[in-house]
Length: 404
Image 1 (tube, rainbow, N blue to C red):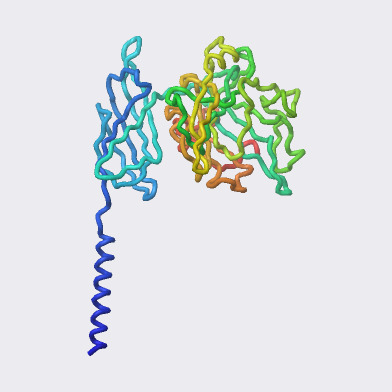
Image 2: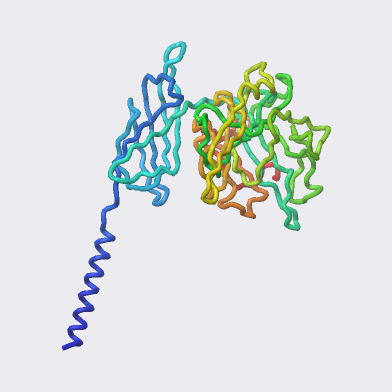
């Protein structure tokens, strides 16, 4: 009798446990009713019409994705599974300018947007996109190499800048910019000017008088950290002695190749980070502007609060603000598990690229990021992808082209 009662109790407990588990697993997924507003910046831009917008949502934990199309409106009502989202918005607007109405492409991106509760309201800022008809950053080799003995070797980093058009372009005066802010360290910088300018922490400039350095369609120029034959010091490296330009820091113990023109140092020293963590950009100053005028007219002093060890420390810094309309190309770099934010306006770059998945990866050496080839010209030159989205445009962690 007791044994029978014991068996009955066990069966009853198992039934209760199964019922509870079934109830949990069948619980409906939490849903949030989202009101999303798309707002063009700067705010004084007189938008006449939101012609066509596409908004994409990706939940970062489950991979759930959905896309919504908007016509003649900048607001969206949608019900989503609660979670943390990556939101991308792109499309076309019409806005008033001095000569009438202009149609332009716009884009915006936000990462890590928490959407939960029964209702939520969010705003995504849109920035004007500029069409590119100038030089682009085809390849950035920033990781350096390793010697056969396993030692880290630097100085063989380079930028490969390419004419992706069908016209002859001139490299003279082109600015190469390293961002002041880092993609793996998000701070609340004040004043926030990122929507309209890029904050430059270091600037170098290609010399020339205007038509000294032509770049033919499909051709490239190389800017080397040190323009020497690195294979003499590291067999696993590359010969950069015939680079077009070299980065030379006058007040330091730097290597000079007298046969290679020096880049002009405009603002601070450019030190290429071996893991990325910065954005790089190309820009053209207004004709006639001097290096000195660039700095004095565009100096940017910012403040932020640094949180460390439970304490908050007021901080400040100085950069040079480069108007977005001067910039011909921009690439955000980072490490996959360390990325926190884009340090450019989404109008310049809506994504980011990397060489490695995690911070300190020893396999990063000897690898680069390079634009994807999407076709060939009639004379066999590569045509590179350039959609202002480095995530889509670049192959990451590939063998540098100069090593082939």
